Image (cartoon, rainbow, N blue to C red; front, side, top):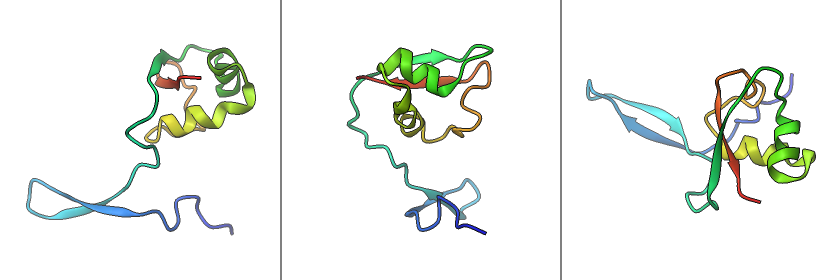
Length: 88
């Protein structure tokens, strides 16, 4: 079995309403990213095709995935999902 891609990620403790804390992963995306546009996924969209249209390069799909750290890249193209498409 291979290790999770999330293994070894930094965590922070998030206070809860009941006084307890829970761990939360620190986002991999810096707060100073260039402006992005938002796009609501439609039926038939694929992340590589969105990269080709929005970034001019289908192999840049990972930039969309990194710009949406809370979206599961495998499900990022479910209709209705709103994605940030990073600036070129």
